[in-house]
Length: 384
Length: 154
View: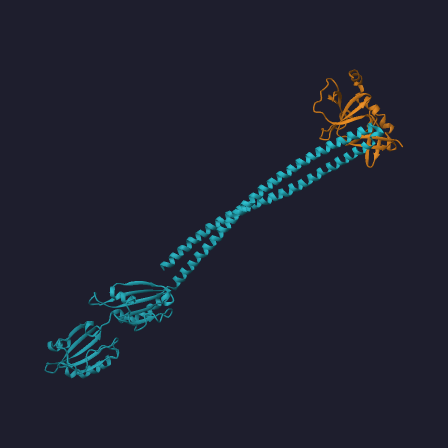
């Protein structure tokens, strides 16, 4: 109860309080059934009572006057568009008769919204990559705080009116929290938005707004891009190595063929040796023939002189033929030496190409391991 | 100037020459040589040359030179020594040489008087040194003690 005599001090107090109460406040004095004095905070935007206006007889203030006691009432959103907590205190004269009432209207705020300005600056900086914190009522964003590290001014701007596709809108409709990842196409970088419905403290079936936290997913996104690139790179390397392995196999086959050819060449040079032995035999035979002819010619005496010359020529010829044999043998020996060298080198190449094939296999195995790791990395990046 | 025409053959490292008039022909060593019992081992045996019986003599063994294996060049030199056909096995027949008799030096009398060898001289031509055999002494030198037996058979 307020006494008429105290009313002026109450008014003075009210004038101070309108500037102090966060979220705003309205004080109204009702005499009889008419509002005679009203004072409100600048931030108090609800149009509810004007000076000179008559009050509804069913209103809480009128009830306080009739019943002569303090009335507390929560006024739902349906009445003024905003929720209000109303307190009406009867005003009595010295005789104790109720002459009117002092009404105090406070917009009703969810505790999260009330505390937002206190916790948001702290919480926002606690996220490693920074965060944007915001609170909406049923229509628009009315609290917003962005970290120093991260901000997207176009995302949940102050006063932004919710649209059907917005996450906050969906959360308010469904009354269920939502965790949504948004790709880089919308805000330039990928972000993660977590939105939670704010329920009325008195009526938990009623949604009064939503609380959202936006965090960047840049690191995860980069990681994913890198692991993707890594996978592509590895696929390229893998393909190159397969090509390498294929050419190593070709080299191996060629070397094998070369080796076979060398063996054949060795066979040919042995055949040449055999042929040269045959030449030697013929030369020996020819020589003997020449010698016998010379003997015959000598026996024939003077008559055999001409024949003796022929015999001499035959012997010379056989000597010449025979002298080619060591030359041929020398050549075939040179061929054999060179071919042996070539064979040795080709065997070396064969071994090297085998080693190369083995090394390629090892590399392929390592690449496969790295590929598996990069796939794992990709998976982790997706889960981040 | 008198010339001597010789058939040159080799035994071991040395070269020998014999007058071409006693040489009948040169052949490869026949595969089949029939052994003769109870004769010195340098008489390898005998074989049939176009219907004629020829005795095969290993001349290296007879001359007591280092015994070497017979090679691909080993030949049989058919000689007609005073109507006796003898085949001597030599390491190689290399040449028929016509040399001036002046090029032939006699073997020094000290060497010539030791033992029985049929060398009558040394022919120097170029840097070659050819031992010239005396075909007349050659037959008796080869057969020595068994000569009589052989003549009986012929």
